[in-house]
Length: 449
Image (cartoon, rainbow, N blue to C red; front, side, top):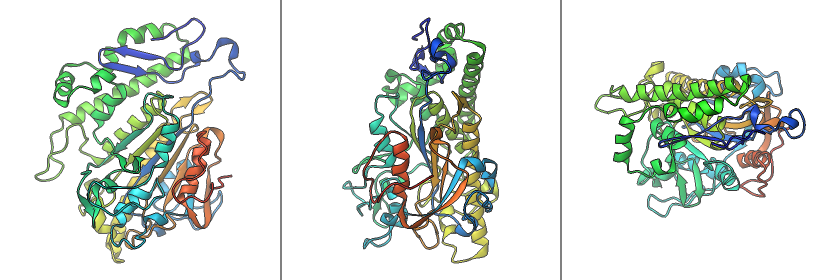
């Protein structure tokens, strides 16, 4: 731990056996003589992408008017309390998700092109080729600034090899993030594994799975392991910083306890199917837990770039929590069946409720002169608009957060016809201090003023 009499260093860590714990931004990190002046520590800007699969019922998604006074549609309704924190962005396209002569495989192309703007190679073999995703462009630029260049989380496991969609590799449906055109970044879907990655030491992460599992059975909470450093640090802090530390440590322990509870729950996920250890039985609890891990990673500045895949493309998840036992993907091929459309709409609405949870958690976490949401930019959307027709134009897209003051949300905006979604990403990269001339099929930056 690094503590000086003048101030606390931004890269302060609490250490214990097999554990290294970053701490959130505190007032003690600002030099005493610089408070209230230009020397104030500036909160970093974060960027995250939250993906939902299989398209949206667009008539229940798209507002009928533009500007600030638009009416929230049924699917967007859970986000109405966050009106001032959200852009609804209509008419953004992902043309590279279309067949372009390659035939079926829209789900694979939708996932692979959503953050890259590149038409992926049709193959089920090892010769996969996509593009570099926007998150990895930012991660590469920020490498070394944070402990992890990026964080990839997911809420649905899948294969990474083999054929998952009409001759397209499972790598395309499984991975939203791509470090190179040949290197997908599969999301971590196990909350325990994600937690250990964030708060374990490099030595602990290098252990084989069996040794790590055995150590986990005997280890204490990460807070117990860093208790000596924590007590030493807290003695040096003022009342406001002590409160921030208490809230932060409480959040970590609460996440730990939820993971422990999930690990003890041995109910099968479905008849004949065992639930993976550490994954909550109820899907909303699972997503919320992954959202809280993302929040902790941002709050402690472990990373400034993240992706969260709520469901992979072609997902056949069922949603008994809302009374739907039919698989998601087949329902989206509803052929205008009102009963099936209603079920898809309810699934879409559940997804926006889960996104609203993440935004509310970010908004309730104070930092510097605002909140984590004020200092973040989060894109929510899908690479397919109409799941019944597999369209890749006029995608369902939201942008939330203040971008450290660079964004002015609270509006429904309609882009001009033919605008690639990658234009939005160029605009966000620019706000991250990453000045990129081109990303996939981009034609320039999207005007968000």
